[in-house]
Image (cartoon, rainbow over all chains, first blue to last red; front, top):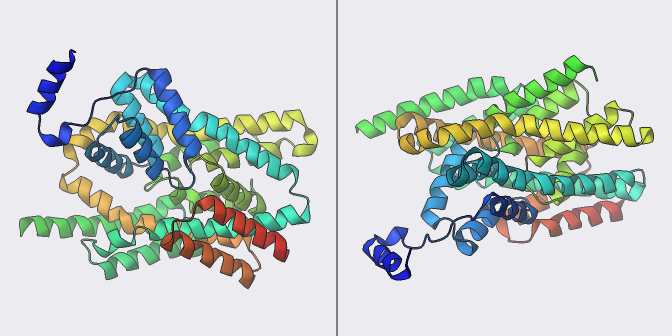
Length: 207
Length: 193
């Protein structure tokens, strides 16, 4: 579209939708971009996704990104993979979804397996075993921190933080101490928690 | 590994894909229960190595399923000593298990996104999302705790200290995670833990 027409249209639009001006060119573009994304993501991929897709490539505005990320988190499954499927699918249908997802998983997966392979080839050395123990507990601390990051959201929970915290502790105990299966934990704690939240949100909406 | 066990394993991961509310880390406790305690396809060491090494490599957390698949395939075919066949089995199992873990949830995302966009403010959807939050937190904390126990079965206080320090540093500073892993590795190697 000619530049001035586009500019005219953008001027007539409300402010929020102004900045979206780019989109992935092809499935290859999607594949390569998500490969690059996957290769940068250490620990949390969220920050990288936002920087690449919103700031650098401008494939989404910040508010679009926030909405898509919320959707990706609502559905089960790995959040970034869900996001790549939604994003790829939106632009190029099923094959676009496949291109974005395989970009995210293929090369990073091969890189990860090579790192594992290299470590395992030397795991018989006591010093490598000791280093792995040290890294293991450091990684454990990182995972716990990732869980604790939700604390501000938990404090605002519609059930009130004491009850939400209790549900969290029960979930922790059943999974980590009693070793219940995940299906059972979700079936019991998840059902109770969602049921109570439903009831509380409903009374709030009515009020 | 028999064919029926192989099939059962993949079907279980297809189910986990749909139960992974809150992402890949939330199914770590279940993978530990199922693969280490129940089926004994992975040792505690192999389990902790899989999760640990998946944290030092870049990429989405779900790739740790591929690492577990690699370890299980390798073990089932006789380990490193068995050579190329075992490594090929490991690689294939890594791929097939990863596909089992992402395919159902991806299909769900693909077909549900429009519906969800329309109904994201509906009471049921909001109740599900906020209602699951306490459980997601509990599951992620237990994932961390199980990983700690797997790397530190003797409960050595120095390793517990490294774990606590790493958690606090992540929460209160912006240090890159790779530095933390390096610090953990150096501390572990230097103290001979």
